[in-house]
Amino acid sequence: MKMLTAALLLTIPLWGQQGPTTREMNLIGWQEFQEWVPGRITTVILPVGTLEPHGVLPNGSDNLAPEAMARELAPALQALIAPTLNYGVTGGMQAFPGSFAISAEAYSAFISDILKGLAGNGFRNIIIFTGHGGPQTALLKSATDAASLDHRVRILVINWWSLAAEEVFAVFGENGGHAGNNETAYIMTVVPEHVHPERYSKDMATPYPGNNAWHAAPFPSSIALYEEGQGYPSFDKRKARTYYDRVNRRVLAVVQDIIAKWDRAGLYRDDR
Ligand SMILES: [Zn+2]
Image (cartoon, rainbow, N blue to C red; front, side, top):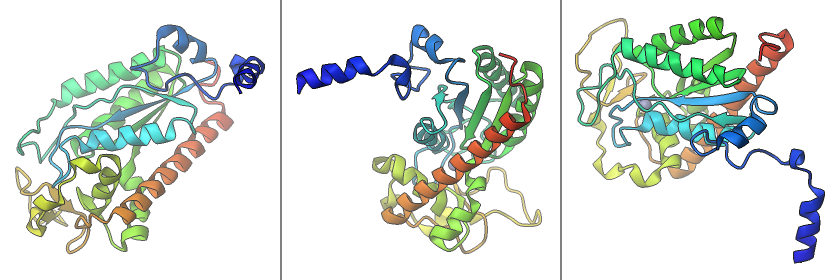
């Protein structure tokens, strides 16, 4: 058995390996990084989120979801994973305990420098998985548009809960919400030990107002339903896992499609 293992090891060339010893930029050393980027790895996933209340989920749910998604999808995308940007522009729920926000100016400058750093290290595709929307969405969009032009790099931002809008209907038969059935399902699959159904009550949720009917500062609830009367957390483990897998499959398909189209169009292909 031992001899067989040794013989096998000798016959597998270094270049035939599946990937580096780790896909995390936090854990990989510079020598191994150099062996893979940009020669064999041209894609990096950057998870971003913020600290924000989420019903009976962790305040860091917007960081935990994209981070888990990055770990799930990095091998299929032949990508490395950049350290998560855990702080963000929280918005209307930042008054809740344990939350706070980075200013828009500071956030834009910081994310712009992160994108510059990733591009400078030779990545051609920067895939941002964001777990947080609100005021951060527009800032991310303008920072990525500018960084793409400035550094001749392709950048894709995935707002996963929006991208997976159909999945919530498919699994739960209704629409979702912030910290609703959809986000609760995803987080239950990632860190089940930090989800607390015993603390939940239905009156913790408020539907987002339609037609600018009202605006409250702060927003009164940490669970915000996309539509009145639906999207409440269900805490169903089986549905949670199904939803998690469907979301990841959907995100993977979209990222692969866009990278393939960038490649086909030859955009910024030979700039590294
Ligand atoms: Zn969230």
